[in-house]
Length: 296
Ligand code: ATP
Image (spheres, rainbow, N blue to C red):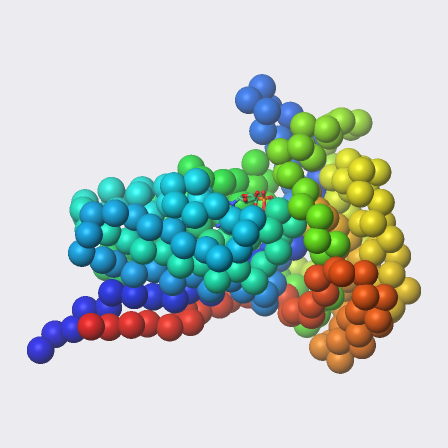
């Protein structure tokens, strides 16, 4: 008797930006960027189940995450279902571990996870380029999560090429638990120069070299509005981080450490302040798999 896989639970990792240069503003309001993006081992769990009804359902218990059609994964599921020529239903459950509106790409990663899961559940095995093109319709960071691994990102973030980082990188991620709107940050960003004079190499050898690239133009908007971001950077450096930077539009800050023990010691030091912040330790990762498969 043949059995069919009808449910997949997929890891949806967070990301940080080791570098984010804003190069220019497009007439449509989007910005041309020059970034180094890094997947991080902090995961939402996204369970996608095919159902016999015709509806798409999105469930998430996190108070700040919309359910149903307002969640960005809903339209991604619609697009994949249309691509497969299917009419059956899809139920998506998101277990949120990545802080929301935090500069860690949680919504985009969930979206990529749903695209990946439906590609497998529908038996499509589409080329990565096609999955990335579908994902781009729902967010500039979605292709990165489908690409996999450390990447140089250009264009609005969708032109990706690999960057090899040949040393372990452990991070302490600190989020002060104030949501920051990405759209607000870009609207308030003032271009002071056009073009980045930094060339990102294909390969980065050590932590010192990696830290020499750490820079984020968006700190100029977020830190004056949320000074706690600057305070967290300083605390991470005081706790021994080789470098510390705001990720994306913030407010999450990551500190870079050579090993897990050093990162954990720094995290403990920061937790002692008990400021109500989200503090966690996670490694830079290059790949991640499905968490669970259900067959009936
Ligand atoms: P970005 O820079 O892409 O906006 P971010 O990490 O700063 O990413 P997200 O956590 O993706 O921010 O949340 C951005 C907004 O999107 C939130 O206000 C949230 O309500 C909404 N949203 C919609 N779908 C999701 C989802 N699956 N997960 C998280 N937020 C979602």
